[in-house]
Image (tube, rainbow over all chains, first blue to last red; front, side):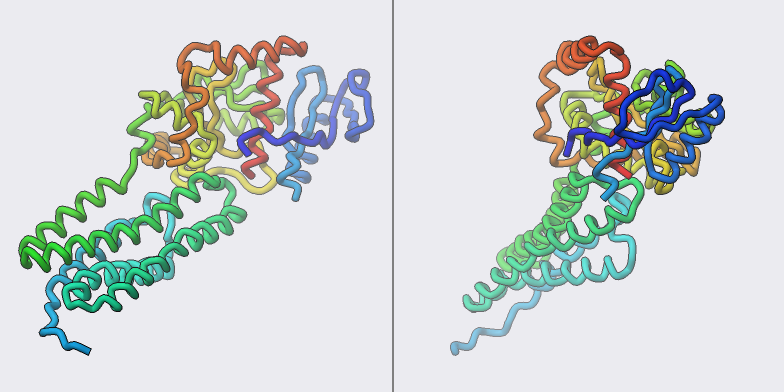
Length: 69
Length: 334
């Protein structure tokens, strides 16, 4: 219980599509930073996900498995 | 049946009153926001009455050579074992419904306290009625006052304010998105809007342990959850379901493992003194007593910190390792 639970990467929002590969989570490509932030905010509010900034143009949304139940 | 002489009611009455007072005195709800409603008080008072009754009548029935009655009274005492389960169930059900949970450790502490308080009332009633029986009314009353005071003293454990220094700290961001309470890194906030909200409305405090006991308490996850709960209960929190990054957090200063903890909260009522008072008033949890693991090497950063940074350098971006880990935890507490 004391350990942080393993999160599930729920979605990836990026302005720099070259940096993202893989098929686990949907990738939302945005034209600008404002658009990226807006999409990330909406997804976060819809899914109760936490937004993390990787500082290379990509935002990652993670959802904790425990809270999904 | 042999008939006994006229029953001497005095010990029973004095013992009952003392036991009941000791139970009622403990029913101040400020500490855990529980019980909060008349129905909660009624059930607790009823249990207190029964406990005081059982404790005070044992001496009298023994003095009257009614051993059957005394045996039945000890049987009645065992019924109080259920109190702990009842309290725990109530609080656990409530846990799903509140935004900042108490945490399992705090719930267990409250439940145990409730159980113990009934036994304490019983014990006080027993001691006081015995004293009255053998030494007279005035000695009994004196013993009653003394045992109530001793019980109060004995039952109120240490508070966070006794073992930790709590000071206000600035809310700031580093590297664009890392939320800091003073020097303590809390989590990564990716959304610009949430960052602005933290900078505008957020409050932060840093908890510095005064002694190893305080350090052990802070290292306990349940203890920090209890602190976050008390903080949110005192000043409110601007948070709802779907806003995990606005959860009040209490985290250790992590890669360095200095033993200090930070707390960030976006309060409704922006009053840092009230926040600090609430945190200082948080009881030190019983479960935090055995969390001694990391405090063998309190201030040097060689313990957990060394391990953390070495695992950080193994993978490429060293700052991101602790970041990601601490950032996940808020959703656990939603």
